[in-house]
Amino acid sequence: MGQTFASLKYFNYRIWFAAALVANVGTWMQRVAQDWLVLNHLTDNSGTAVGIVTGLQFLPVLFLSTYAGVIADRVDRRKLLMVTQGLMGILALALGIMTLTGVVELWHVYVFAFLLGCVAAFDNPARQVFVSQMVPADKLANAVGLNSASFNAARLVGPGIAGLLIAWVGTGWAFAINGVSFAATIAAMAFMRVGELRSYPKAPREKGQIREGVLYVRNRSDIVVIMIVVCVVSTLGLNFQLTSALMATTVFGKGAGEYGLLGSILAIGSLTGALMAARRKRPRVRLVVTSAFAFGIFSGLLALMPTYPLYALMSIPVGFFSLTLMTAANAAIQTSVEPEMRGRVMALYLIVFTGATPIGSPFVGWIGEQFGARWRIGIGSITAIIVAVWAAMWTRKHWNYQVDYDLWHRPRISISYVADESGAVKAKTTVEDGEELTEKQRKEVADRLKVQGMQDSKQAS
Image (cartoon, rainbow, N blue to C red; front, top):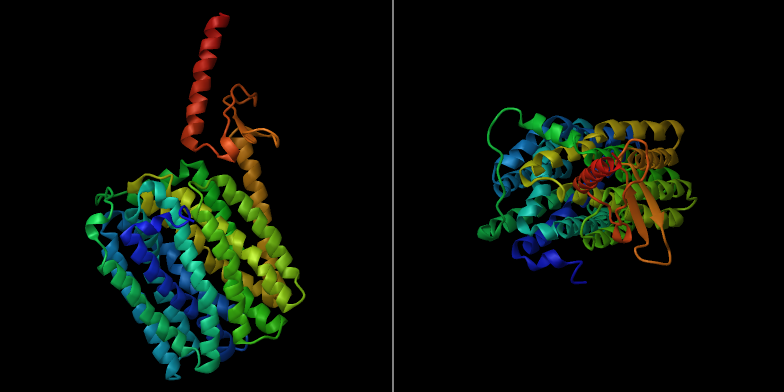
C-alpha cells in the first residue's frame, strides 16, 4: 500500500492530488452532460453531431500543442496552469448559464468545445510535466499512475452524479458545477510550498525549438513506437463517450442514469489499472504493446455483448487495459527524456493521443450510423489488435532481440540482443522478470559487442 501511494507523502503533490480529484469529478460531469445535451436536446440522437463536438474540442491540439510544449519548457508552469484552469472554469460556467436560461443552440456547443480545446492545448503539456516538479525523479512513474487513479476515481462518481442531475434538474447544472470545481486546482497551486518545487532547466528563447523536439523524438525509436500505438488506439478505440451514449440509448433503450452508470462501471477497471500502474517503477514499451493487444480483444468482446448488464460488466476489463496502455505510455516517455525536452516531447505525445480525435470521432460516428452502434466499438478493436501485432513484429526485427522463457528458474525471461546484421546472437543480456533494456542500454550492449568483435579479429589474425 505504501508503494502504491508513495507520492502522497510530498505536501505539494498531496494537495494537487486532492484538488485534481475534485476538478476531475466536474470534468466527467461536463463530458456526460455535453453529450446528453447534444444527443437528446439539440439533435435527434445524432452520433455525428456528438463526434463533431468531440472533434472540435480536440482539434486545437493539432495546431497549438507543439508551441504549447515550448511554452511549458520556458515559463513557470504553476502560474501557466492557474491561468488555463481559470479560463476553463469560465467557459464551463458560461455554457451552464446558457443552458439553464434555455438559449443554447448546437452551434453554441460547437464554439464552446473549440474554445475549450484551445485552452486545453496549453494546459495539457504543462499539467503533464508539472508532476515532475512535485516529486523526485524516482517517484515520477508513481505520481503519473496516481494522476490516472484520480482521473478514473472521478469517473466512478462523476458520470453517475451527472446522470442524476440531468434527470432531476437538467444538464445546465452539471456545466455550472464543473466551472466551480476549477477553483479547487487554482487554490491548490496558490497554497503550494513553492520552495519545495523542483527546479528544471528552462529552454531559452531561440529559433528551431519545435524542430528540435521533433528531431529528438524521431531519433528515439522507443518513443516513436509508443506514439504510433497510442495514436491508432486513441483515434479509433478510445471513444467511450460516443460509443457508450449510443449503445445505452439506441441499442439497449436506456436513459441518462444508465448511460452515466456505464462510465462509472468502466472506471472500476480504469481505477484498478491506474493503481497497479502506480506500483510499477518504470513501465516499458512491451507493456504498452501488450496492453493495446488486450484492449483490442476485450473491446471486441464488448461490442458483442447482447444485454446491458453484460455490456456493463465487460466494460471493466476494457477500462483496465485502456488505462494501463495510457499510463504506461505516459510514464515510459516522461521517465526516459531529458528534463529540458520534457514539455515538447509530451506535447507531441498529446498530439497523437488527443489530436487524432478530430479525425477519429466523426469517422467513428459515421461508422455507427452506417453499420450500427456496435461497429463503433468493433473498428477500434480490430485496429488495436493490428497495431499491437505490428509493433511487436517491428521491435523484434529492428531492435534485434530474441526472448527466452524458463518457467522453472529465475530469471524467467531473458532477452538476447544482437549486434550484427546477420541476426546471429553473439552476446546475451539477461533481464530479471521481463524488464526491458532502454535504448541507451541497447547501444551500450552493441558497443561492447563491437569491441569484443575487434578483439576476436585480432586474435584470429
